Length: 318
Length: 309
Image (tube, rainbow over all chains, first blue to last red; front, side, top):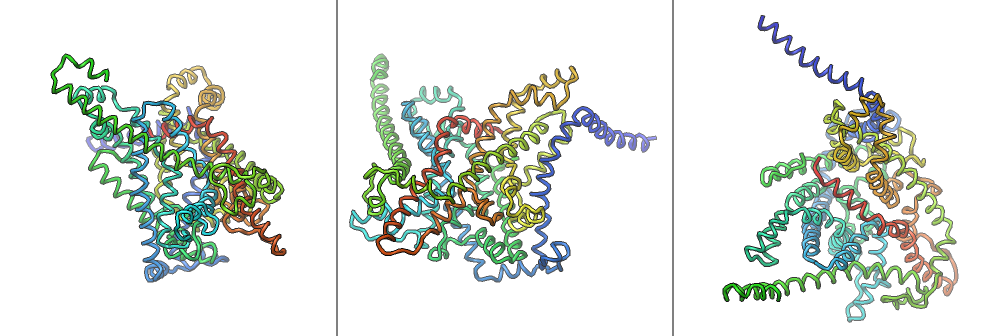
């Protein structure tokens, strides 16, 4: 009797789901058809490549294809870890991304806090509009601007330095300067864009908190620390998590264009290396192994930071 | 000042502290204005310098005479850019990619975002996870390249339109918009009236979704106009190259020098230098011209996206 009722309950549960699904299908079959093309897109261009990443464990043969090629075990990963360039790649990738995070994360917050203090609407609008504009410049154009400005012969930076009595420097040929050039040109291009989120968060701060701060006789600095910063925190945590999740995915596009033989010792990162050995040298399996290693580290970093953020501030991605 | 006057009734200590605080605040706000002015100049100066250089004479540009305003105003740089077939083809290609790519992307994004916003759509949360997972993990460059190759898209225009057609972030933005601004009662009423989902989308949703369609279109269009990576890996024929790839070969790889006598060569080099500035302006112009008018849509888009849905 009891076992019978249990099994009835079980089947009724699964059949409830089935009923809900079939009801939803009857009601929304057109929508289910509508999502087919986008779903096909995600399967073909996102999930099939994930499965294709098995290539990292195979000796790729163009004629036999991915599944026909013989297994290679962890050969390519061993090749990667024993490669003397491996340490340099990891070091460069981490160095550039942490540098970018440490400089690039606080500056938009400071910009938003500063703009929030301004009562002159017109000045505020102008600063916002101008700082936001470089975001729309393409990577190719951005890199050409950097190259034109920093050119040792004709660049404006060296012209000014020359007028002040300094010797011309080939900025892009100095491995030691590469990271700073990358990071600060990024700040120049992106701070206004990133500040928008924080400005919105500041606009959403409860006005009564400012009133209370006024009554308590807080000055501007105290108001920023005690009212503005806590108001920014949730947005800042989310953005920090997302940036850490992108640590290993540091921008291929810009770094690849900024590279030259002179600065390569500081500018070769995992993604540019994958592109070169994979597509330029057609060493598919090895490049896939390097890429897979990168994706996994990335995912692990994201999960860790998300978990820490959840613990510390109750803000997380999911 | 007015503060201290209204406070005269209060104790002397209190009012004197108010004066000191407001003095400190005044210093503080002055520093803030000063810093923001520095930031403003630091961002604005390079932009002005580029535009001024593009309008100066080749000799002035290559001898470093340009500081702020154009020297020996000419349009020679622009004229030589407009005579360059490579650039014109690239421009036309980019216009095509931007128009078609945006259309495809926006359509696909709405096709997935709207159903995912409906509470009565069973399976939506697992589908959402299915989609957002692609943000966290990817197969990598080579496996994706091989898929595109298997599909026969290498060196075709489709390679720039399809493999990156949907950005997950845009799906999230659109879905949040549909959830927050289309009342559920609307579709219930339509349901009772026997209106099909498709008809409902065309006659009710799309007209209501104009703001989000604007946001999606602008973001996709700017992304498509500025992209070069997909073209770099998927395209081989120069006749298909988008503008950004042409720019790369002219601006960064310096790949346009011929053989000629010395004086002609110097002239040519100066011209090439000037052309770079004109090209930068021409390439960024379409986006920068529309930007002031559409800025609020961008801001709106970012704000919708930042609301956790």
